[in-house]
Length: 356
Image 1 (tube, rainbow, N blue to C red):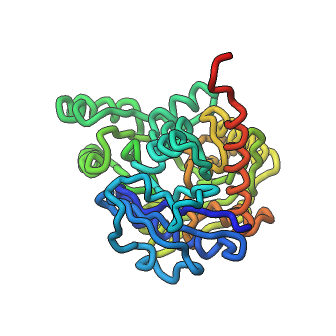
Image 2 (cartoon, rainbow, N blue to C red; image 1 turned 90 degrees about the vertical axis):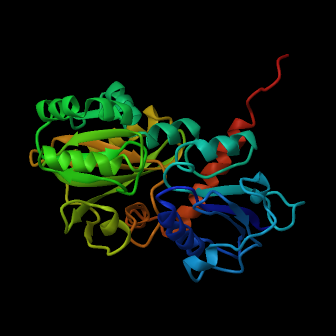
């Protein structure tokens, strides 16, 4: 009997377009002889739209932008397939950014007691907030670049003091980021105080919390992590942007980036990277998948940059390419993630919920 898979994508987020690209790529990877695939689309305005089972891979992103149906906005019945008497075996959330990758949807799925691919509530929310993530990395003893963070109100009431603090504690250039976005949305590089102010104003369009990180002259190395309680790592890959840094355009639009897989690294450096990736995975209590991003300096000093708890599966995405070069093809990777989701769900069902 075919497993019934629910694809949840779109979302009320600046990363809506990325989610659609990921969803299209996943439909191309799923084996329709093994799975019934039901699309659940969330518009950028937050309206839920469910569709009948797909006949095959989505030929275009437009095909996934479902027309209005009887589902009310945010009606959880959007998770149900066309035949309500059939439940879904597993949900694959493909929602990047806030309102999807940050633990909100994961919490709803937990309350609904539905199996779902990827990280749970804690890992998703902590991994989404770059400041909380960095603080947990500090607890785990993971080395990282210096940073300063603040919220909108602090910037509004004390901009001059914060600029002075950043100039004193960090060295130029710095990178200004919304704390709760991924895919390089709202990120800018600043070489001086004037550029810093402009970059913060831009980042505040996307989040109330901002993190400013010191730039580092280093290679950008990424590793895929897969598993639940016993995670394993892929080969390492290196990002070499042909622009100033690996921004949204380079990631998802023009492919203006060189990806070197596997990265040329001494064996001992690779072993340190995988150990750090697993440590980051465990301190956030991750499950399913993570892409761990590092800086490696000329003298092989390792700094963790961040982890992405829902890395993209677009044609330009590093995560599936890392696993393909490790020996796990894209369709097999999707199947592995589904198996891990069911494994985690079945383990949770063993928990006692009634007092004797």
